[in-house]
Length: 137
Image 1: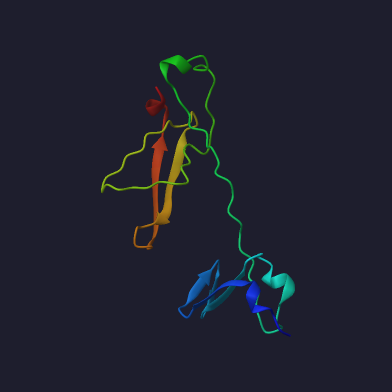
Image 2: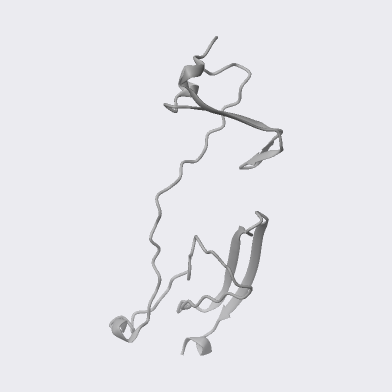
């Protein structure tokens, strides 16, 4: 079966080990067409089609604020279990601080930092904080 080469915009070959999700591949051949329809028109039997997750639109995340202007809810308990979520952080200094408010729930909360260094090295840090009634007042 043939494919019209005039429809191809770019062909890329990666000979290095390639990781996608939980699977590792010994290389990848990527064919991009101008119309983005290569698979619909040409799908050889010995090829493996790997679906990619599409980028998702940017989300706006809620950040709790206890400013003097926002004290109308001060008597309503805060029972959040997720205290802080910041999906995109660019840290340029060796020390970096974040402030967040704890929940009114007592207990141990886990702080997880996942990401990549500027060199592409995976980063995973897990710490715990203890919230007690003496911290809440």
